[in-house]
Length: 481
Image 1 (tube, rainbow, N blue to C red):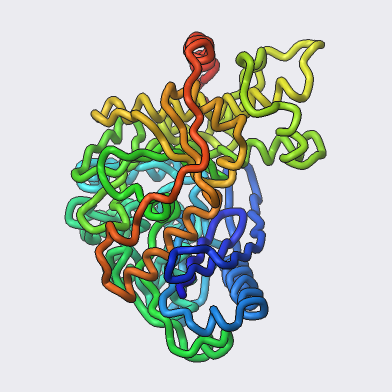
Image 2: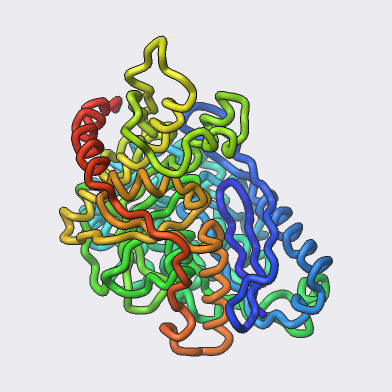
């Protein structure tokens, strides 16, 4: 038995997977975000621990026999968060999250200090990444910076609590701007540019490698007969790739979680930092992932549900299974700023084309289309790096919506495929990494592609209709910085 724990932004999801790679149980607990002022986004790390322990306690209560047999644990996590610990390994402040935009000025400082940043990391400095956040802390909270002894990404902090070991995997570390992406190791020059050294960093491992063991007292709490191995794990999107078998060049997938991304595994680094394409090490040794990333995807639908005072399911129900034509309304999904291709933390969302005849359905459809158009921007930025997307698998909570996947297929003009359980792809991928850390099996034998349950093919008429709308949609963007 293997556990996959996905420390997301809106929830912790834990899955229990058997030796036949069947998910036999899952649990989820919600998380909340604090935003003291516009552009700020933080979470209390204690939330992560409480939520994770609650999912594991629930699995122990419902599946005690299976939990007793757990041999390996994999961790997946939201990327880029800055969790600062003191000499006693206690958090000094709430974690600054991936969608926090406060460090825009620090990005410019960092690129000036370290001219090789883009060449070494494969990325440009953007406020969501971890390193600029530390420069912000040094300037605005110098006492906190001086007291910082260890900087961890969210899932590495969870691993520290579970095992007592400070370890990170190279895929998650890629989103810090402190990693030499080609060497898959910390860059001393990057750390120096932010006033840090390797002593402030966790030990690095590959995602499928053993990283630690579960504390004996926690193994007893959850009724485990041994101390399971904890794998290196992965950032949420690389973990999602492992979960759907996207471990080789030529595959691509779209993630519709709180944020969104269009991602392609590559055997070499094919960076395009000038268009805000992200370069991450894959959770698989010798592989990388190139990604176009948008800061708001399924969170846009959640925003609309709050606005109208109904559930997301109630918003989606009147839309049916596929669009008949584009919505007369246009939506910019920049509710928290944007990454690819604009790198603009200050830009905000917009509804355009409203009239007296506009109804809720038109607005909801526009929200889904706006996210799809933003992913088309990601497609084009990847194409500039030589990466052509011929088809895409869908993961994340948004993949449950047939209408949304149909919109995506037509906007991107590629077939989009859906899997059973695609919304738990990252947790399932983490469980696979936990298994690999225990068994040492061939990666390709474990990271197989699950069966696709539905394919959404582009429709020529809708493809043309959306292609005509895309230039006008792009004209709505106005930089605010």
